[in-house]
Image (cartoon, rainbow, N blue to C red):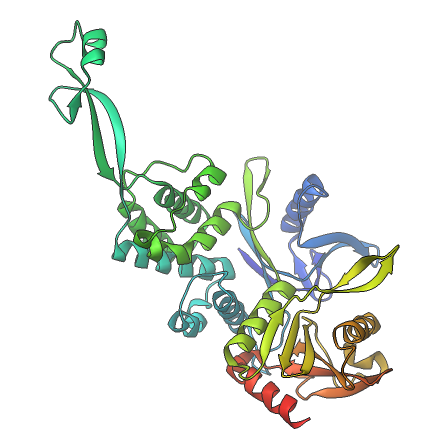
Length: 422
């Protein structure tokens, strides 16, 4: 049974305004939460609202799944009037592929809408399975492994000392040492383990079919033993270049992106992503590929807010610093919903964000007469035009810029036009 919620939503038990879960499902999640907090990361908190227990979802997206139900958390962004869960899943998949969290190409990004008709974790699995299919098509890498055995026929090299010591009675057997050119190596063991994890957790018939077909290609490969050791053995030579795109996703599935927990006999599978981080990486990728004429630096950390006994403290690190000649502009991503009509609450822009931008400008742009800072928010139906400038002391100007996630290819060009014309 699938239940879909969004970031920052409140989830009620049984019934209530907004989202709710059946009492049995809510109680299972509550038990899971209480048994694992504070030692395990949770994408929601248990609190009270109107005298009733509720879950408050944070800004993480992904899935938490048990054998009999799945809780899907999607991005809270309205993609126009016709926005729906499939479009929100497609957006999330497109962002994850673009920033390299999920393997894929531009073609696979464009195919995300079709894939996203299934729940998020199933779409995630589908993308992974298609990429593993490509690895299998191009050929599984092999290596020579040393073996020692007692065989009925001579193979490889006869180990005379072992033959005398161990086969004095069974003289019809040969103590031999030989090499075999096989697929049982770290990369294949890890991929096979990830496929076994998928087949245990998928409820999609097509995913299950594709996983079983792929497992045939890994027949004879032993299970992954120690995850950390196996990951260190993952080769990076030219013979394994076609394996590299799936390494991160393989590790992510095996680690499940967040700790694995168990409630009695019922296992909870989780795959979660911090939406602010995904959005920041996504915007940075768009800018690096399209903001021509500007030098782009991410997470510049050379400035500090204060000093203590001549030692710098409180490091200031804007998301992006762009420069062209002697001109510099600060860009900072905020995964928040703005409302251009909500003047009472300053459109949803927090006072702390403006304090933060002022500190960035005063340190990173201190030598410029005009100090420009652009806050990049996701565009929604209530925020479609640039807001600003918000004029701060010392000629600091802050703009709120809507990033159209449905037409991301236009973000850098419109920003470049704005920067050049203002």
